[in-house]
Length: 225
Ligand SMILES: Nc1ncnc2c1ncn2[C@@H]1O[C@H](COP(=O)(O)OP(=O)(O)O)[C@@H](O)[C@H]1O
Ligand SMILES: [Mg+2]
Image 1 (cartoon, rainbow, N blue to C red):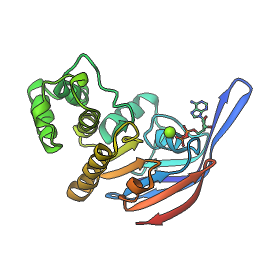
Image 2 (cartoon, protein in one colour):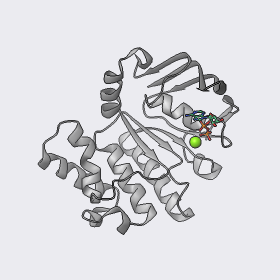
Image 3 (cartoon, helix red, strand yellow):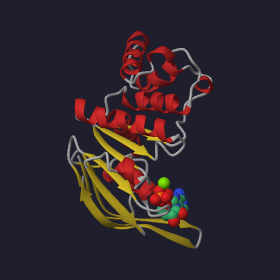
């Protein structure tokens, strides 16, 4: 599903260069649940952005579903992302003027699905994630944990092959955090959702099948849980 080989990323800001990734090799198979850990600044988000086709590597190769994504045009990368990849971020990034239901069906709409089907899908997804009672609430009327479940539902409505989550629990209390990770665990077990989760909490990361630790842009160690 994901194959990184000798991946480097150098950010250039004027004369200053930041070498964020230094030769990353990684393989993730369909149905794997992998957590990425490591200190702040170790390159975790950079790696996720490259896997998520949001950014391009400077060197090395990146294959997602056997596709060499760096070779694709920007337009093809955008439609690939919309179809194959769901994202969850720390700060939910929900649109405040839309209800939970409306936030969730945006990716369906962008993919060209008709309005009625969009609503039905979004409703089903919300029920599955235990927020079926919250359909017409606006984001500010929801707790952090509920908002994050809305953003997970939004990430999943197009049935992506790959779910990528960058510190999805960093703004949550420990109970809501555990709840969110349990949802990911369940999705992985029930529908074999392939998941890459970034977290700096070892106890949450250990709920994945495998952990990868980054340090200074390189893989420091790996462990099966
Ligand atoms: N867009 C960017 N431009 C310049 N430097 C960046 C950018 N994004 C990240 N970096 C730098 O790359 C390094 C890795 O950052 P990041 O991948 O965000 O680490 P992490 O997610 O592990 O905290 C850091 O030194 C960071 O400052
Ligand atoms: Mg980060």
